[in-house]
Amino acid sequence: MHEKSLIIIGAGLAGLSAGCYAQMNDYQSHIFEHHSKPGGLAAAWRRGEYLIDGGIHFLIAHRPGSAIYDVYRELGAVQTTTCVDMDRYMRFVDEASGLKVDFTRDLDKLASDLKRISPDDAKAVDAFIGEARRLKDSPLLMDLGMALPPELKGKLGTLREIWAMRGFMKYFVGGYSKSAAEYARTMHNPFTRVMFENLFSPDGPAWFIIMIVATVAAGQLGLLEGGCPGFILPIEKRYKDLGGQVSYNSTVETVLVENNKAVGVRLEDGTEHKADIVVSAADGRSTIFKMLGGRYINDGVRKQYSNWRTYSPTVMMSFGARRTFPDDPPLNMFLLKHPLKLGSREISCLPLRVFNYSDKFAPQGKTVIQVMLETEWDYWDRLVKDRPKYEAEKERVAAEVLSRLEEHYPGIESQVEMTDVATPQTTWRYTLNHEGSPMGWLMTAETLMAQVPRSLPGLKDFYMAGQWVLPGGGVPSCIYSGRHVVQILCHRDGRFFHTFFP
Image (cartoon, rainbow, N blue to C red; front, side, top):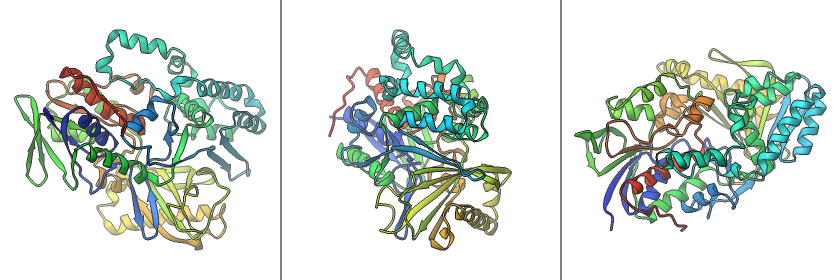
C-alpha cells in the first residue's frame, strides 16, 4: 500500500528515473511534463520519412558488467534497447593538409597514427594513451562513484570512496585537470592541438577525454539503434507498469508551499495538485527562482547560479539526403580552412554526425546527417523577436554548412531533400532549460568536486534531480540523480531502498 505521494516536475531522464524508483519503493508518484512526450533533452522527432535525433549521442556502459548497466536494467531501458558498438569514436579531417585520424578503440593504432602526424608530441601521446589503457581496465571506469548521493555517504563513506578512487584523484590535481583547450596547447603540432581540444568540449577537463577514449577501447560506448525513443519509451513504459501517472502538456508554474513545506504544484492553467513530497527534475534556475520565487537559497546556491558556467547552447542542422555514407564513422570533425561565421563566433571546426549505423533514421538508400554548432543564446533571442530575420538566419546557416560539406561529399547539396534547423530557442521552447543549455553546468575542477545538495535550505519535503545537481549532465548522471532522491526519501522514512529488474 502506498503511504506517501510524490509530484515530480519533468519527464526527462531524471524525472522518469525518480518516478520508477518511487514506485518500486511504495511511493505513489505523478509526473507533470511541459512537453507532449517524455525525454526532455533526449529528444527526437520526425520530418516526413526521416527521424531526427537531437539527444543522446552515445550511451556509456551499454554492455553488462557494470553498476551503470544494472541501473539501466532496473529502469527497463536495456532489455528492449539495441545498441551498436562504437569501434571508432571520431574521425578528424584537416581540410588544409588532407590529414585524417580515426580515434579508434585500437589504442596501439591510435598512438601510432598520432605520433606519425607529430613525432615531436610522441612523449605526450604515449602518456595520454598510457592513461587511457590503465583506465580502460579499471573498475572505476564503469562506476563513477554515483551509487549513493552525498547526503547518505557520511564522513566514513566519503573517506572509503576517496580511498577506492585514489587512482583517479590524480586527474583532479595534475595536468589532466586542465581544460582540454589548455591541455591541447602543450602539443606541438597544430592539427594535434585541434584534435585534443575538440574530442569533447574545449572547456571540459582533459581527463574526460581520456575517459572517452578508454571507454571506447573497453567496448563500453554504444550507439542507440533506434535513437532516443528506443531508450526513453521503455523507461516510460516501466514507470507506467509500476503504477505511475504522467500528465503531458502540463507546465508547472508554482511549487505550492505551506509553513516552509512543499505541498504540491500549480499548473499554468491554474489547477492545483497536492502531494506529500515535491521533486523537481526541471530546469534548476526556473525551479529555484521562478517556481519558488527565490525564497529558499543560501550563499552556496547563490554562488552556483551567479558564477558557475553552463554548456553553450547549440544550433543543430539536420539533413535528409538521397545518399549513403558506408565508410564514415558516426562522428566526424572537419578542421576548416576558412572559419564559418555564426553571430559573434568564428567556427573553425565543423562536427558531423552520420546516422549510418541503423535503418531506423531513414529509408534504404538515404541517410540523416547532422551538424551541431555551439552558439550564443542572446544572438538567437534577439533574432526570434523578428520572425522573418530569425527564419532567414536559420536558412543562411544551414545553406552555409551544406556548402562546406560539399567539399567532402561532392553532390551533397543537390542530394539533400529535407532540412531541419533547431536553435537554442527550439530547445528552450520544448524543455524550458535555461538559455537552451544542453547539459547544464560545465564540467570544471570546481563543479566536479562540489557536492550539490538534493534539497534547498529551509524547505521541507522538496528535492531536486537532474543535471543541475550533478554537474556535467549526461545519461548516467541524470538517471542516478533521480535514483538518489528516492534513496534519500527511503533513508529519511526508515525504509529499505528496493530495486528489482522487470
